[in-house]
Length: 270
Ligand SMILES: [Cu+2]
Image (tube, rainbow, N blue to C red; front, side, top):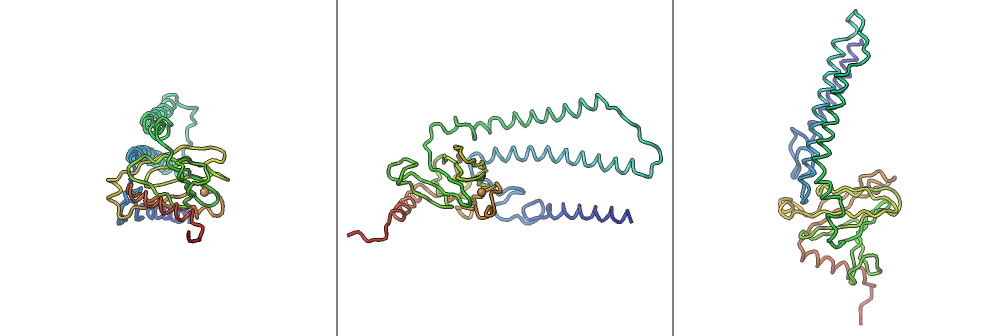
């Protein structure tokens, strides 16, 4: 009976992992268009660097996961109940402890050093010091609102344009945005751009991305998901918007149309 349960648990685990491995976006399934084996293909100037770090760290985790779980299984079978002799009690082994402290410390250093320049180029303010702010992002339960400067070219004035859920950007500049929240924690996430940042009430985070026009051209569409990656309340699932990457002239036309719509009072001018 015990063997039966053990086997049942084993089969469940294997099948559980298999459904993941065999899922569409993973190793063996048919790949949906634009997907790599884990992420959708990136389309921003720094996407490649983020992916490199993601796969580097995932690879490390995979190796040590297999190693430690393998050891665990091996010990379970080798020192199972069937062996009549008592186990030896150990007070520790300095050499082993040195190894299993030293190796993780070394690996953490590898991670720390390999991410430093990428982190600085994306998150440090020095990366966007000289760039104008493109728009403001306000997260609130449960929407994303993008504020564009109006005719006066300044943000935070009465003529600001508001675009709910849709961020329209030209493909030829760094898109610097001030991220804020009106109520609770949200997380602004554009998976295709590899951009993710928490929005914290009372704080302003300058964030940025730049679409890579060559990568965007490979896509079958020019709009991509924006989601909230922080469980922020009952309507969290509704906080999905999109970013639309267009040419400079298309962007200007859209801005003009938005302005006309927003300041139209419904009456024909005489
Ligand atoms: Cu949210």
